[in-house]
Amino acid sequence: MDLKVLSSVFSVCKITDLSMVNVKDDYVFIGKTEEELSLVCDTKNVPSNYTEREDNWRAFKIQGQLDFSLIGILSKITKILADNKIGVFAISTYNTDYILVKDEMLSLAIKALTEAGYGIVS
Image (cartoon, rainbow, N blue to C red):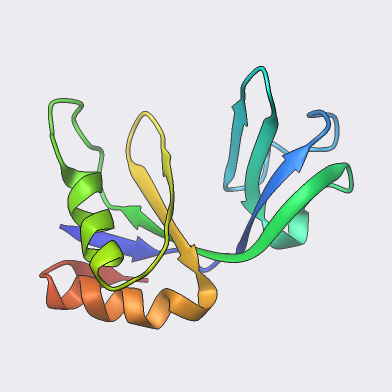
């Protein structure tokens, strides 16, 4: 299985509303619950109406469209990273999964995943 390292640097934010989010950006992930409105986007495009933010995340995209019947793909990857003491922030879309790691852990994550047999593409 191949993982693509995205070139963007991401931020994970809490925002007050969606009015300043540029949904035309290549990568915008929005999550809403009764407690919060969360946004993951390119750091250079963080809207000014954030209340909290965590910067310097890098992302791996699982290549290809994943079938919903596939089991354990995300858990296998996150276990490899956890075994190497690398924290993650995971996002799932209809087509695939994204695994974010802090920028300073990216090289170690690439090494661990490569050693485990994953192909890394950029």
